[in-house]
Length: 196
Image (tube, rainbow, N blue to C red):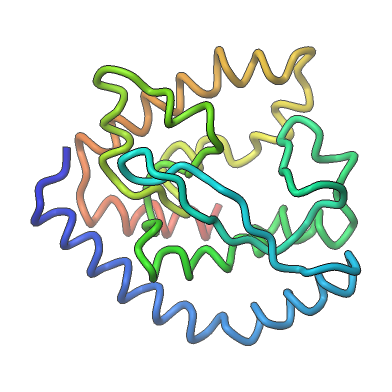
């Protein structure tokens, strides 16, 4: 578990980098929101409840990439995304608004990805160490499973595969990340997320 000093170091790093990134990303972000609004003929800004630090829900911000209802179903994405939505998801540009989540303290640049209810909030025992840190834009589990949607689409029962294979592996990876945290590793994971 991170010490108070480590949490402070991580938070200062998050604020500093997110401010710089937002300064560069603000115009592209606005353009993408306008394009998404025109493409979907509805608000291009998407908000979804996710589980954050200490198991508290927060509003996660994204650019809309899917048609249909207000739910991102990772098991049925291909039937609900437009060409523009597919491009934004594949480039991760739909996640640019999460820099706002980082700036206001809901998220970190690096950490376990925030899950919908029914996963992180159900953790028990020493697995709950995952809830001791802010969820991240990227991290070791995110990098390993960067093609998660493609992997799930190849499974006969994607939901079962996620629950029995991917999710337990992510928990193990994220526990190891927290127990061995360092700022240098966070910088590496940010770099690896960009170049991969």
